Each structure stands twice: as structure tokens, then as C-alpha cells.
Image (cartoon, rainbow, N blue to C red; front, side, top):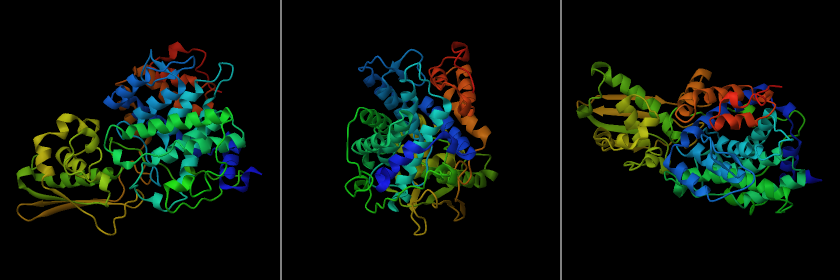
Length: 474
């Protein structure tokens, strides 16, 4: 009876999916997503915005507590652990991105790891339990996004993780808590009333809170549903429900549970090589290629004095059009900044967004020579956009290059060794080497891990010596 509505159908699928239905490809792709998300989350603990929300969250106390990634002697109640770790994941805009546009992993992983630590010791959560809940959360986000043509483009009004991330977090936590179908419907209804954040806060310290809140609110929605709190049983069906976020919302029922087709099986995610809005990654690859052509005869130095104009042909995305970024957060959302940085340095990195690099004179000089163009065929979709960078020299010569698929995009995924290098580079400044190695080994063997709290132990900075009994594979 519960599956007669779209909401009931979602509840049936959330409740009914089991670990045997996870395909090898879904498991492998989701483990890559988990490893990458943990790495950017650990790196994010060092940011100012994460330190501020951590300090704020210290006012809360509870008998239940969960790990704050990168902290050996500091724990928080599960809701606030999910919040702080979610903020850390998105604090540098370094987390994975999907199509239709959202950051799928941060809200879900932060919530399920925090929740997994809140279970009684007698009820261990296995790595396979965690993988299943994580993938349910990813799946719900993807399905909701596919109910709107508008969602296929880079957003204009609200930040998607604040909407579908909240719903995905609720679904994942509902799965981990083994809620029944009615409770799953209520969890989705409760989560919908927590969802949403305006895009006006992009490129500020507030944007990372969107992912932190999605993790916290989804977890809270599932816990409230477990307590019997009730909401609208048709929240996914109605124009005044999830339809409130999309002008062209068209909900559909999900496939049957028999041989269920996972969206992650059909399309991978993009994993970033540097911490900035995904659209800038096309710009970086094109600009780096132009620089290589330009400096062949210039002793590896960019001839700034000979550059008359820099033209960027990009899609029209207003919140990534920032000709004079004044902070690291604005720089991460600036076509112009990333293009000029890549031209000057040949590549982008975490250090590219330091205060010193944002304000260096050579960069400011190049920014003044940069202009954007928006070709009509360059649609603002992560699946189809391109970037063309052209430099016009004072002698009239022009050097150009175009990027249609950057390295790290789902059409050109990072090699395993490059993903591991990114994770280790991010994590080693926060955790001891032994803990970093423990995370890599645990994630790669997650479907065999008997007690997934081993992952939290490593995330706190402890080594394998601290958990001789927990480090067991099935």
C-alpha cells in the first residue's frame, strides 16, 4: 500500500534495498568517493570556517559522542559531529561533484559515520552496512535531481546539496537505523522542511555550512522519524513539497527492487584535483595548455608585458564570474582567477588560494587584462560545457586552447594512484602517517570490515595499535 505514491515508492526502495544488490562497480566507485571525501574533510579541518563551527559546537554535550575528524581528544554528539565534519568536507570546495549538479558525498558520509558511532556496542555496524547506507543516500539524491530538467544545469537560485543532500542524508540514516517504510516516509518529510539554502552565499564562509547542515538535518530527520514524528506522506509527490524547489518538478516512481539499477553504476562522479568550483577545472586545463605553448621560447616565464588580452570562452554562470576576487572563497568561484593563476603557474593546487597568491601583483595585472565571452553553444551543464582560453599578444598573435573534458571528470576519472596521492596529500598534514595508511586500507576493504568504527578510530588520529580487536575483516 505504501508504494502507491512516489513518496511511498521511495520509502519502499530505501527500506528494501540490501547489500547483495550493490554491484562491484558501485562498490568500487563509492569507495573512491569515500576516500576522497575523507581526505578533503581532513584537510578542511584546518580552515578558518571549520575552526569557527567547531568552537561553536563545543557548547553542546551528550552521553553519546562521535569523532571529529582529525581530533584525537575532542568528540561531539552525533548531530554536531555530522555538522562539523560536513562543513570540513565542503570548506574548500574540494569535494566530489555529480551530474545533475550537486556535491553528493559530503552530507551523506558525514552523517552515516557519525550515526554509526552512536549505536550500542552490542550492535556493530559493518563496513557493508555503511556502504549500503551511503549508496542509498547517493541514489536518493540522484533520483530527485533527475525529476527536473532545470537541475541538469549549474544552479542559479539555490545550492543543491542543501536540498537533495539533506534528503540523501535522511535516507542514508533511515537505512542505517533500519526504519520501516512509514518511518522512511516521515524521515523524507521531516528532511524536506530542513532543506534549502540560497546561492547568494556562494563564495563566502557560509557555503560550507550548506553541506554541514544537510548532514546534521538529515540525521536529525531520521532520528525524529524513529521517535514517531510524522510529516506529509506525499512530500515527494507534491508541487508544494519537493516541487517547491524546482519549477519543472516531475516526480517518477523508482525501478523495482528486483535487479535495481543504481545511478552510480551508470555515471561516475567528478573528483577534483584542486579546491575550487567544478566549472573552473575546464578553465585550469585550458589555461595550463596555453601557458605551455606560450613559454616554449620564454625560458619558462610568462611574458606578462607582451600579453595584451586574455579571453575566456565559458558558459554564463554568474556566481563564478568574479573579475576581482578579494578572498580565497571568492577566488574558488572565479573563472578569471583560476585562468590567470594557471597561466602564471602552469597548474593549480591548494596553495593557489592562499592570501599571498590571491593578492600577488602579477596576478592582479593579468586579471585586469581578462574578459569573459559566453558562446551560445556553451551550455552551463557539467556534462557538456567547455572552456576556451585565448591570449592575444601585443604583436597581434593569438594562442588558444580548448578543454572539453578535464582530468578528474567522470569521462576522464582520476587514476587510482592519483586519487591516493590526493588523499595522502590532504590527510598527512592532519593525521599521523600510520592513521592515514589505516584509512586507505580500511576504505579499500570496507565491504569486509566487521566493525566500521575502526574508520572513526583512524579518523581521530589513532593508529592500528590502538584497536587490535576491531581491525578484523569478515
